[in-house]
Image 1 (cartoon, one colour):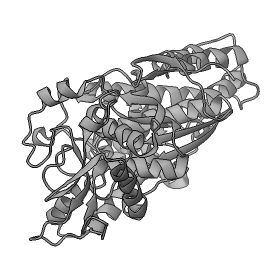
Image 2: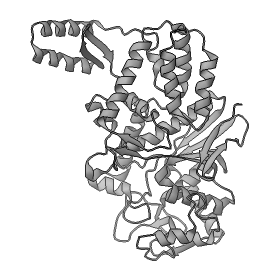
Image 3: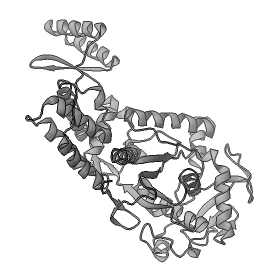
Image 4: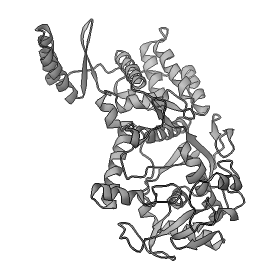
Length: 460
């Protein structure tokens, strides 16, 4: 197979990928905490992971893709402080934590579908794997790396010599940089494996354990479920860059303590999505969802195109102007490829150049540049360009198979609306014209006025 190079956070350098099993790759993707709607910042991580999987599959690998659903145990503070996010969400919405988790899991999966991401091989929920988490905690306890306080069972980081290897921070540096009240914890970097249910509260989610009634810590779920579905070690672990210093560091520690191996051989992390050059924050009112984008005419696939326009390890700045530019580019691409002849044979030289970029740590920026080079190549027959672009899109995931060599055909209802709108514009009844534009949107269509008349396209 062709050489694939990936930037491994564990070694802090680009490395040649060497699978544990020839022709196969196992990847664990840190999934959402389903207490609220996923923001477009959250969703960047899943576009990245999806493209990673697609690149491996296009390179001939069989991929086992595991993505967890965190429906218990993630506290408001990543440092084990505050209440469980699911319990907080339940109080906010006047529902049970189970109902909140179910509702936001469905919304999250719908968002992934709208962005055309591939369905993971397995999507385990933390609440379905309490037994596996308890077993791993007991294994860590038997190695002498735990202690118990009044509120839970904790991992003693000072007893694991390699702790800090993922972030590159020594334990002493982590302690010096800590700015939290540690309570009964021995060290600020120690973390909860099991939390006891507060005696004065009734939780929606709690289980019996060898240590007392309670619920698992946030980190243990990923180690336990990754091991169940991928074995340990496995090939690749992905997530956002904010997971490196705490969540993934602690996952790595748990696996090393319980099993004596590193959890994964390659750790890949995407950078933050910025909003207007700054942080995304609920207090600033800029934690946009895909639905928020849709109100501005930006489709989920256009957001996917926008994400592909930057390397996953680069900060990406979202503005409404840049999002509209991505929508315009996708519209232009779709309008162009609809006119092409039906696909025949792939231009292998062009496809290999595309894959060379993607195998080089997912260089989607250069890959998108090749898309437009292909579109503008007047020497290639459109049927060859169509086949080649569809081969590209097996990796990019822009759902172009729905539009390549497929002229838009309007239904009789849509054609009647178009004719009525033309009549309204001829009569200078612009209010009626705008009303009819809204009717088009209900049919999943967009109409715009050009010097050549009305143009209709699907909302994508």
